Image (tube, rainbow, N blue to C red; front, side):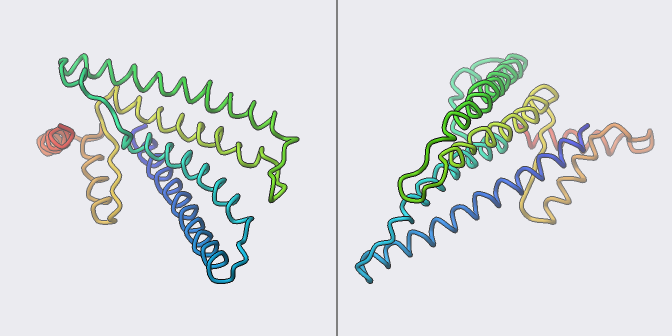
Length: 204
C-alpha cells in the first residue's frame, strides 16, 4: 500500500506540474504575440485574449490540485500549534476529510452539472462550447480527491510520502521510505529503527 501511494503521488506531481508548465508557457507565448500584434502591427489578435482567459482558468484549477497534493496551500495553524500531537492528528484527518467531501460534491458533481448546463453556450470570439472551459472543474476535482486520499493516509499513519525533483534525492528518499517498511528481518531491525527515527525527525 505504501509503495502504491508513493507511485501514485509521484505520477500525479509529474503530470500536474507538466500540465501547468505547458499552460503557462502557451499563455506567455500568446501574451507576447498579442502585445506584438497590438503595438507593432496595430492589428490586435482578439482571439488570443479569450484563449488566455480560458487557459488561466485551467491553470488555476490544475494549480489548486497540485497545491493540495503537495500541501503547499496557505493554512492557518493557530489551532494545531496549540494542541497535543494526538489532537493534531485528529484535526488533520478531519480537515483532509472535509476537503475531500467538498471536492467530491462541489467541484466534481457540481462541475459536471455546470458542464452539462453549458453545452449549448458558445464563447463570443472562438465559438467553442463553454463546456470545454468548465470541464476543468470536475477534472481538477478528481485530482484533488486522489490527493486527499493520499493526504488522509499520511495524516492517519504519520508516514509522509516525500517526492523531490532531483533524481538522486528521489532515489535516496525512496530508500529511506522503504527502510521504514514492514519487511525488515531481525538482522536489520537496528538499521530499520534508525531509518525510522530519521524519517520521523524530518517530519518534525
